[in-house]
Amino acid sequence: MMKQKIKTALQFTKNVLVTGALTETSRKVEIEICRYLPKGENQIIVEYGMGHGNITREILNHISPSSKLYAFEVKKEFCEHVKKTIQDDRLIIIHDGAEKVKDHIKEEVHSVIASIPFSFFSKEKGLGIIQDSYDLLVKDSYYSQVLYTKSNFKKFQMVFEECEMKKLKNFPTEYIYHCRKGS
Ligand SMILES: C[S@@+](CC[C@H](N)C(=O)[O-])C[C@H]1O[C@@H](n2cnc3c(N)ncnc32)[C@H](O)[C@@H]1O
Image (tube, rainbow, N blue to C red; front, side, top):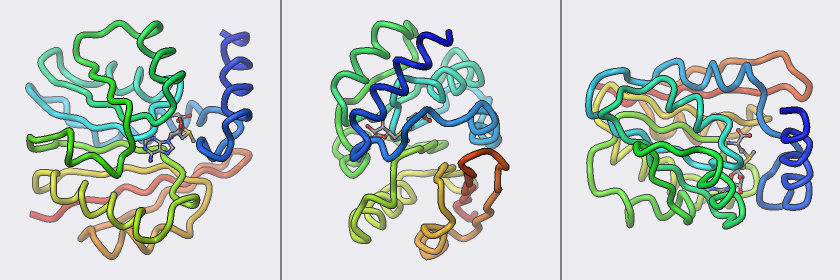
């Protein structure tokens, strides 16, 4: 377990300009980011920034057997790692960026869970991802995003009707934005 965590940290550090982090997000994040996941049958969940699959695993532990998880990841090695380490028929790995979500997802989405590094994206790219996610989500559903900064919160408030920010007292401090599409 510890050996795997060190391997993941090395991979993240090596690719820091894409990952935006030196280590995986904390256990507190894995729990808090899944707060609004729907537990019903046939729910469609989308994850952006799967990495080595820590949040992916947590999502799969929460959702029903008939639900599906589409997980986007730009690094091919990370997709291959998760393919080897998580065997679950509900998981569909998409080796592409969150900005291409509409090219891949043609159905209504019930939740978006994201750990992509917004601070590394241009304003247009970031806002595009938020707007496309909003369009795909059903009413009363959530987009939850973890970041190391508060500074992207305004972008989410520009698109979503209700946004809440939760501060997790870790080092470094992690923020979770929970954004709800209105009814
Ligand atoms: C901070 S890491 C989070 C990884 C893991 N989910 C966690 O919680 O530790 C961000 C991840 O997003 C991926 N990523 C970066 N840009 C992306 C994009 N445009 N679309 C999808 N994934 C992206 C990175 O390769 C990296 O795996």
